[in-house]
Amino acid sequence: MLYPEISPRQSGWLPREDGHEIYWEEVGNPDGMPVIFLHGGPGGGISPNSRRFFDPEKYRVILFDQRGSGKSRPFGSLENNTTTHLISDIEALRKACGVDRWLVFGGSWGSTLALAYGQACPDRVTGFVLRGIFLGTTPEIKWFMEGMGRFFPEAEKRFLKFAGFHENPGFQPLLDRYAAIFAGEEGEQVAVDGARVWSAYEATCCTLLPDHGLVEDFESDEIALALAKLEHHYFVHRCFFEENQLLENVKLVAHLPLVIVQGRYDVVCPPVSAFAVHRAWAGSELVIVDDAGHAASEPGTIRELVLATDRFNGKNFV
Image (tube, rainbow, N blue to C red; front, side, top):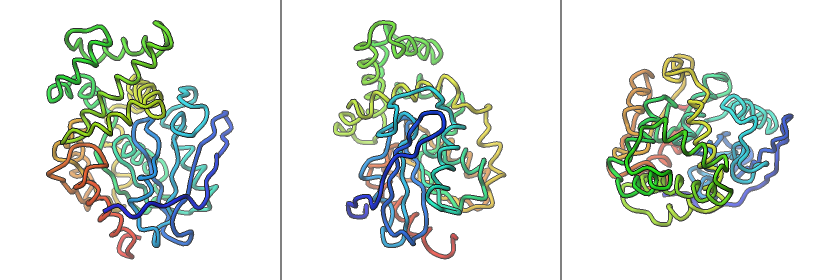
C-alpha cells in the first residue's frame, strides 16, 4: 500500500552553527500539506521508502537524516548530539523550508523525538502519526538490553557473546561493556564488528516473521555504524530526558490529533508504552496491528500508516 517510488524535488545540507550539516530532502506537492518525517534509531537514517507513506499529490513531505545519521555530516558523530540539538535542527529546517505548521510523522525513536519536539513547539504542529511508541524511559531501555532476548534467545546469545558474557549481566553492565567496545578500547575493527552485532540484534527482533534482508541492511556500514553508536549514546544518557518526561508532558500537545499505529507483537517497543500515551491523551486513536512486530516495513503496519496519513490530509485534521 505504499505510494509509488518518488525522487526528491530538491535536497541539500542545512549547516548548523556547531559544525553539523543536516541532510534533507523534499518530495511531493510543494503546495500540499506539510509533513516532517522523523526516522528511528537514533542513527537509523531515512530511506527511499520513507517518502512513500504519503500521497504525493496532497503532501509536501520533508525528510532529513538526524545528526550523525545517513548523509548528515559528520557521520556517526556524538559531539553536540542530544535530543535538544535534534529539536533545534527540526525547527531550523522548518524555518528554512518556510513552513508555519506541519504534521509530525515518526516511528520508534522517531515517535520519541516527535513527542519531544511537539512538547517543545506545540504551536508548530498540526498533529501526529506515530508508530511503535518509545518514551525513552529507564524501563524501556532496560527491556531493550535485557528483555528482548526472552523472545529471541539465539540473537541475544550472539549479542552477549560478543560482549564477553555467557548470560545477561543486567542492562547497566551491558551498556558499560559496549561503551568500551564502541570507544575503540579493543581496536577500531572490534568497534565496527560490535556495531554490526548490536544492529543485527535489533533487526532480528524487529519483525514478527524473519526478515533476513532487514538484518542485512542493519548490518551494513551505512546503518550499523551510526545506529549502534547513537542508540548506545542515547541509552546511556536516558535520551536526555527526566524520567517519564514525555508522558507527564502529554498535556502540552493533547489538544492536537494523534494516531498511534502499534504492532501487537512489537518486542523492541512493547505496546505498553503506546497504551500509556493513549490513556493520557484524550481523543487519540490507537490502532493495534495484530499481525505485526516493530518494523515499519511489515504489511499490516504499512497499511495502517498509509490509511492514517490519507485521513490527515483531509480538512477534519487541519
